[in-house]
Length: 152
View 1 (cartoon, rainbow, N blue to C red):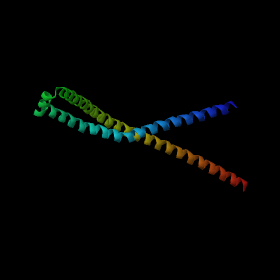
View 2 (view 1 turned 90 degrees about the horizontal axis):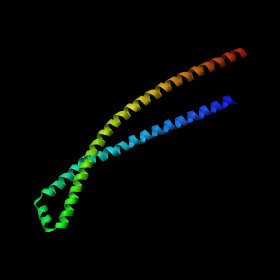
View 3 (view 1 turned 180 degrees about the horizontal axis):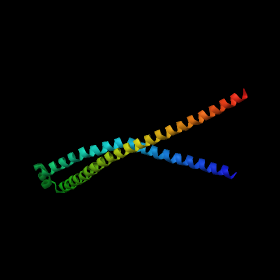
View 4 (view 1 turned 180 degrees about the vertical axis):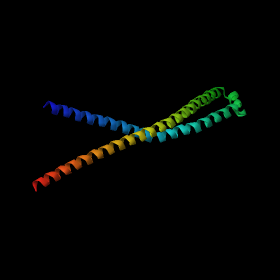
């Protein structure tokens, strides 16, 4: 009875371990799929943020902008605040996009290394398992042949 409980516990632990490994593998695969989207977001922030900054700076330095500031003081003040916010937010977005792009690149290299090692380990286990199965099958077939020969 005690041996059966230990075997059942070992089987349950192996199943739980396999489930955790499967969950981790599927999580990593999902992140790899999301990587393309994140790469698009970072590239668009690297492209669009400088355009927004240049446009805001162009408006700040345009001659008509000062005329609007003089004619409409409250509107001009709001416009200065909004354009300043555009420059600040776009600068933050630009820097974040560059950092994210670099991290995605390094993560991709690590993912490729992980995938290669995982495939090598699976191949090793598969080869070893096939070898053991073949050995067991040969032993069983030899035993069956020997038993059949004895019966004849």
